[in-house]
Length: 106
Image (cartoon, rainbow, N blue to C red; front, side):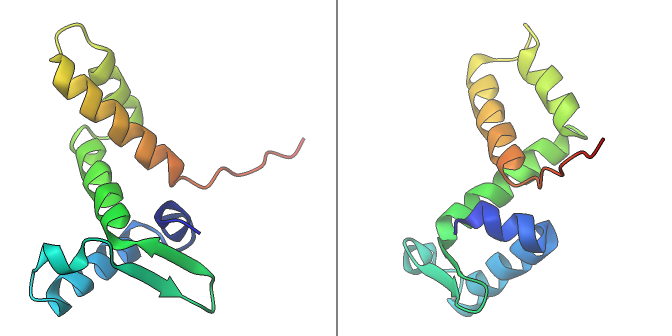
């Protein structure tokens, strides 16, 4: 499974705790963490910690706008700089990939 599946199952707080714990464990050395794989064998999770970091950064960026809806509105504004639009759209896609879609029953 990927980092976004970990977030779906355990939530943003657990993802942030995991990243901060790994970051502290390796004395804030990003070069060591680059390419390091996180494994939770009993839950069948295997993902790169750098992917988790990217998702957390995306979550924080979207959170700065208040919600996904407001972030999308900002990204679609003609007044938003193109480089900001690109980064925000990628962040929105990251966050949406971590949202558990519940099935609606009729």
